[in-house]
Length: 302
Length: 281
Image (cartoon, rainbow over all chains, first blue to last red):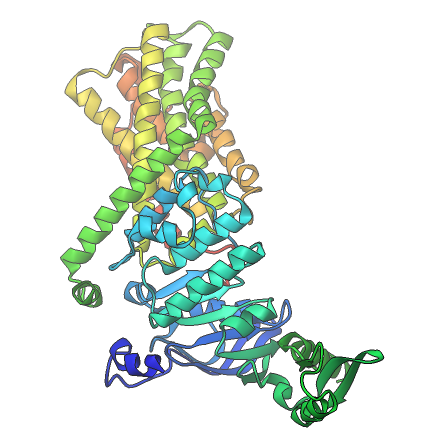
């Protein structure tokens, strides 16, 4: 495709492709409780990596260690080649952050907050263009305390990308978005990715992970269960498929491991198109729920 | 883009300082703007000392010494209390709220030099203190015939006592802001310090009327020394003999306030948190 042709221009040529995030044997304790057990993780330049897991699994702990807000108790953490806990200002200029909780700026207006944050970065985006990009132009003169939840979240996103980060952390970014805003947000993220930004995403919306992520990791009880591409996670691609169609006696369906053959048979039987034909495999959500269900059953048994 | 990244990768000390001062200045401007946008904060922090002055001086009448009425004694005390309230109480509460709302954490995730935040707060405290003191002084001159500081020496003492006292209070306010666990509990944690101090430090009540042990307690804190230093500015020199040690002790005022400045400078980096909990949450 054209993208393969464009790629050398986008990635700085000849730069050794060291991972943007490199985590080895990471352990984190809260008092006696173990929040993360020997976690390994690698995020490559330019990829969108989603961290999935139930509440309390360690997603935010993990992300906040990578952002430099929390220290760790064992293992090594390298983000853009630096230990985030000891990272200097220059490092923070290369990293964008959208925290899980929305930040409040009380009586400041949207435009004032954006302009103020822009001053902190060496190569900040133009405030007006950025406000336009996140769809807040109509609210630019509004005090931030008067914004709706979704609008505040869009401002968080604006502040996350204002410094043109190489790496962007998105911790449950679309909570409180309506479906339209969520779509707009996804397209914004796709644009950033096309521009070479690496993204570390945590989310509870599986369709969000499926739409955006190149790879996903499922974390439960401080352990990574599996890392893979969304299409094959949990052996999704080998799972039984369900072929459904509308036969002479009404809707019919068949669970099969060889859906292509079933469809070929249907083609013969109907001498052409089978009405209402669908082939479905377990959704990412199905395999995810199965994985975390099995994991917690395992914990309870031990 | 390349040039600015290079400049960021290898900042010269002068470049860093310039960046810090520029960003500190911008933050200060923003803090002042925000302060004056919060109408209630403005009204209460400007009017509260005026109310205190009016109420206390109407409660007690009479002369403390020839030519010195109770309200004369009260004016420097109320000015000092005002400085303490803006520098210590209002600041500590506002930082605790910002921490609770995640504003501090958000700032800490940017490449802003962290000292710029404190410069901004100091600018805000200085501006609001000057405005508040000017309002109070104007009211006192008109309503109670307070004499403005005598000559350049008087203004000089007024300036250094106020500045040193405000600095000490501000640093203590920043240090104490980490004590309340939530923004909601901040006023309850911070206010008692300020409340008790103003009664035992010669701000609302005459210091020499207090039992000696309470005078000793008050001497350990900055407000007593701020009040005493400002009395030397606004009361006639003849009143000095009525002070606890029969003099204004301006040298000791400087020493006591400086000790608190140093103590504040030591405490701030030890206690200050950008996040709600020690481990980053």
